[in-house]
Image 1 (cartoon, one colour):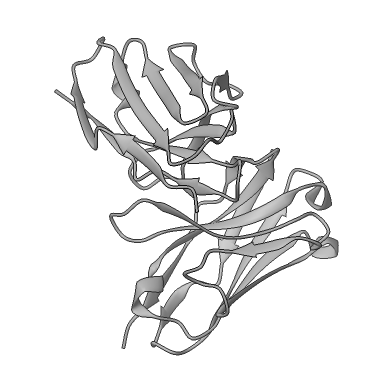
Image 2: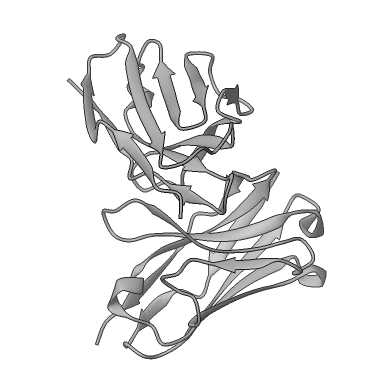
Length: 106
Length: 117
């Protein structure tokens, strides 16, 4: 099983600042990596797939990068609606999720 | 508009069974693989099971293998999860998800399963 490790567990950021979230795979997943956003009481929402492609309707302030085992999700200027939990997921070899990064208001 | 609506959750005693359903609409159901993902209270996401468009390929997480069975009825645009020998650790919100080239582009709102005596 491919283990996905996200860091940090919690990220405290002020509105308007940049947030950088990391995700590491225990073995290469090529670019088969997605990011999801989940707000309290809601289902997850697809943000990024193929490591760097924004899903339909996702604002340009969200960007993804990386390949192989190291991936990054960047939110260029945090808006109030961006405070949430973010999960990475690999779909190269079955499917596994990271444990999540909570982005909270500083 | 794509819609996925889960049902069938509830309170069940350990060792008993439950069958979850997911009704799909707004897309050609039999063109896509479908998965179940669960989330224990206050915890992260866990892949549970997946089924290909024609039921030819099926997979399970080790944590549920031998106890859960995934199936689909393309004529009814429905996905199912038969859960047997339920344990307290199966308590979670169960989501169904539409799979497009590996990623989950649509999710349902989930159905809550609570395993407790």
